[in-house]
Amino acid sequence: MTDKLSIRTMADYAAAGETPEVLFWVGCMGSFDDRAKKVTKAFAKLLNNAGVKFAVLGQEKAAPATRRVEQEMNSCSRCKRCRILRC
Image 1 (cartoon, one colour):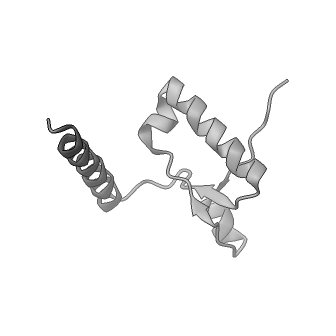
Image 2: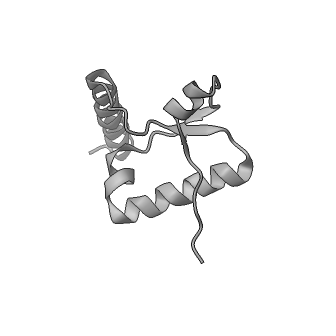
């Protein structure tokens, strides 16, 4: 038995004139890494089961500014961990 996930993209919502409640940012790991894909699918199932209207970006490319923000967030979280662990 296979579970078919129903995941709409932002383009799907825009075409229907709707807006999702949540933009699920999957990222590179969630898209390509085999172990992370399992987490991505499980989280999408949770959102579906909870009735949350969510979307992913789909085939649209992430803008360079989006990538910079993601890098800054990652570096910021590392800084916080270092302060907590006193590395």
